[in-house]
Image (cartoon, rainbow, N blue to C red):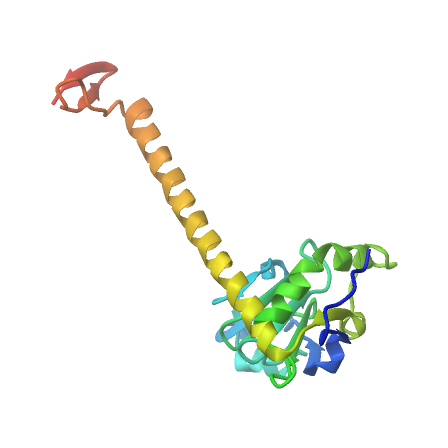
Length: 217
């Protein structure tokens, strides 16, 4: 169900607020000289509603020149066109290149704030995914993304909305890191206590296993 937009908001095409929208390319995989370089190359599987600080693979200048891969400037918005992550979005915090399954949006900063656009597209994930599922090849396309409409408030409001959501994202990311560290600690203690049998006794001294028998240090 569509809601009435607040006053001064518009519903705009992504193509109308972008300086450029384009996909990337993949250097020929059999050419070893095209890979293991120093140019970050983003695979669509890495686009998971997140910010990109590094990529899993890197290509060479020769690989870049001999493929459809193109440089994507920092703080662009990248949408996965197909594959398991179709419809998901990312912001690149480093200049990088991408494969052809990524739609790269370089925004007009006078019209749109990249963080706001990132959140607006993230919010539209289910709709974008349904559009991909509704096509013959279960793919999105650059032209479909360019025509896709999102709600757009004035620039100042975009910044305020993005700032609030970014703070929440940072807290969620911190909590996830803490949870991961606690999970790793629990695994370590489980191994120490139930595999190595190295745990404190009532006097605070650690038990040690010795050929299956419990001994004190």
